[in-house]
Image (tube, rainbow over all chains, first blue to last red; front, side, top):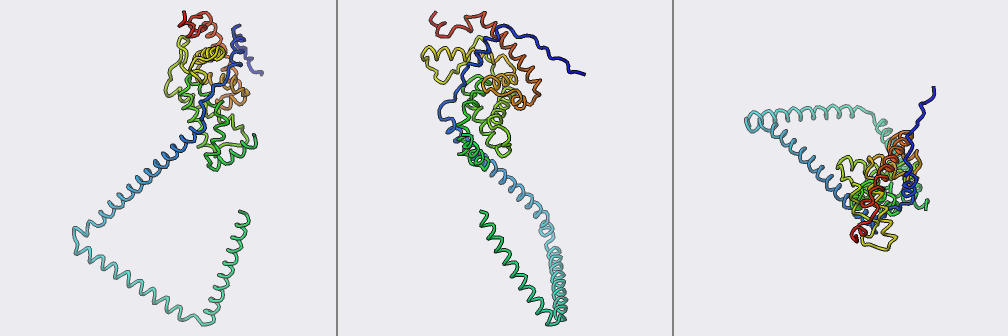
Length: 149
Length: 197
């Protein structure tokens, strides 16, 4: 099926003369220094954007600080309301934590004491080899990047 | 020149405003003319052209080098002017009241300048009869001499829709022109002639 044929109404006879005028019409020029004015405007716009961004960041920081303060205040409220029991609870927590840490150190110490001297020597040598290879690789990558730049 | 343009474009894409200002200098005339023909006065045209260039600079990283830069730039300017019309419903210039702006100098110059200004004002008044998108199509076709395909792309319409829009716009212009010809006191005669009478 073919598309319906677009049959526009014919243009008035005056169109030809008008079209000639349109074709001959000159371009309207901007006043001298257009690019200079644009550059100045761009700088102003850039500064405005930077100020807007700084304000946004400050607002975000302020909100975060306020929220943190509120959370802290909420958390410290029991200390203000019942200082004795809260302090006792905190001391108890701290003592439990310290006991756990000491136990963990003791376990690690006893495990390390059981490792033979030969394995220590092997681990030490392997560690140094790994560091050496890593240093070599790093210097090679830096050299290649320097050449590319 | 083309090579310079490519260099400035590349630098501008890296954020160099100074390089982009070279492109501004290069394309100020067609962009300003488009804005002037769209908005009808020199002040708004200056502002719109500056804004169009700012928008282009902000979007320059998204510019596809496969596309013609002038085309891309003009599409930003045309769409900005269409938006301006939509937002402000700018004052429409009637056939009885020609626009205040003229071809650069406002002082009456030699006869040829005066004639050119009269013609420009007449055309401006005629263009004001068109809808913003039709006006943009006519301007891009006659002043910027862009092909149908590029104008259609810029105004986000099909080529056939553009052709029918252009036809409708031509009809409107011709009818308005005929009417104006029948009222020489308003359109044909210059202000200076009227003042002299």
